[in-house]
Image (cartoon, rainbow over the protein chains, first blue to last red):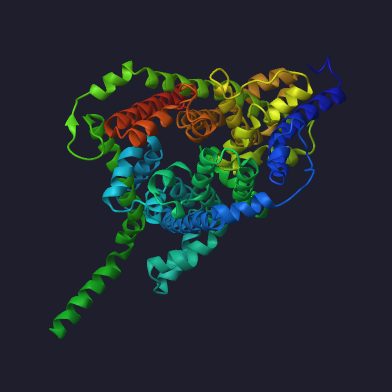
Amino acid sequence: MDGTLTRHAQRTIAYGFLFFILISMATPFVWLISNTFKEQSEIFQLQPTLIPEEPHLRNYVSLFVDFDFARHFLNSAFIALVHTASHLFLASLAGFAFAKYSFPLKNFLFLVLLGSMMVPLYTIFIPLFVLVIRLGLVNSYAGVILPGVAAAFGIFFMKQSMEAVPSELLDSARIDGASEFRIYWQIALPLVRPALAVLAVLAFMGSWNDFVWPLVVLRSQELQTLPVVMAGMVNLYRMEYGMVMAASLLSTLPILLLFLALQRQFIQGLVVGAIKS
Amino acid sequence: MSSASIVEDRGLRAWWSRSERKVVPYVFISPFYILFIVFSVGPLIYALYLSLHRWPGTGPMRHVGLGNYTYLASDPVFLKSLWNTVYYAIGAFLFILPLALVLALLINSTLIRIKSLFRIGYFLPILTSTVAATIMFLMIFNNQFGLINQGFALLGIPALKWLDEELVKISVLAVATWRYTGINVLYFLTGLQSIPPELYEAAQVDGAGTWAQFRYITIPQLRPIALFVGVVTMIGSFQLFAEPMLLANGGPNDASLTLANYLYRMGFSNAKLGYGSAIGWVMALIIFGLSFIQLYLFGAFRKED
């Protein structure tokens, strides 16, 4: 390989391939953005236009007026925020216990925790739905949030960073008479703030983008989350392409902004499973 | 009465101050185990129970033994959805993962200087929801005005029907490639960056060429990350749901239907909760089995690891 191509040629080929893939991946998204400002007839044109000929915001306006987009956006935001806050609390509390206490059955319990990540979602899907009905949680946000709130990955992740909290700090607080919960809340938690940010980003994104569980739990349209409503728009309003694309774009925006603000945490969070394996 | 409660209170307090550190960790971890038992273990067992019954969701259940499972073996739609799911998994292994590995190797090589542009650019699609991404592709694959056929028209190539029976699986794979290549690039990059550079330096001293270095250092050193990526990809492929559902509603003629789609159709649309649960258990057994085989093949059970 070294002998056949000069380094310059190799570099050109490498950059060419990387840019080709990058452009292929970016094109659909650019096309989507451009179409949200187009009239249906312009979308249907045989010759695609990159810059809309007569750009307008009617697709966005009808999204808010005809579809109550704001309501569904807030539903998604509420569910994602409650999910994220409760998940962070439960995961960091359990992670703290696994990292900083020794207690009988600890190793066994931790193994059970790791094993719980193996349970495939769809296997428990039907009985979980029956359970949610029996508990009277169908068509409620609690029914959407509760089953997924104590995911094992978060505990596993928080345990790793809680281990770095110096035990002497906790012991000196104990001598001062602080309760164990206070030690967790006031000493350990502030020290693992970076890890909490990573986990928050992952939890928020997971909940915000979740589709199939809210689809079955929430019955009334006005409670429904964005992905489910968007999926419904495809079936009912196959013709309103500009509007559906505008909805796709707006629904992606919060995650995109979160990513731009917390890029490092995002990437770290998503590769952490790979590193820890 | 009041003095008794004071004594009791004192006893309780003394007991608490003696044993707080022994009790507290169990209290801290209990929410997870309670929720895990209620929302995972319980349903898992209940799914097994349901799978041995015929039940439309209300009224009495009828015990059918392994009837649901034997019926699955001869159900042409189930077998089709199983084949489709295997097709997607094979497609991911033959297409998404090699592409991601090549991109990661290029980004990691000394040829490329602007690494973060590509790393982040490839990664962005995973931020979209499957629903938003699939809606976007639904329009890209549209027969008349979809971006691909518009492009074909410019080049004078006749339009293809991307969502018809023949091509729909390829289209589902294209959506998956768009969304999941970048995250796998990140995984492989993490693996590549964790290889100690001394290994390559030593190999160069010994006169090993680029290919020899790749074959004898990079590939063996990537083994743990490849195992992780392989298991995650396999589990993800076997749980594919939203893409085929939104792109073609599992069709046409069930050509894109996955196991998860069929489970949903049986359990929720057709109210065959027992049959749907049997599909769920078959999925679980396949996922466990394939995970075990991958761990075995990659030597995760060998002693030296």
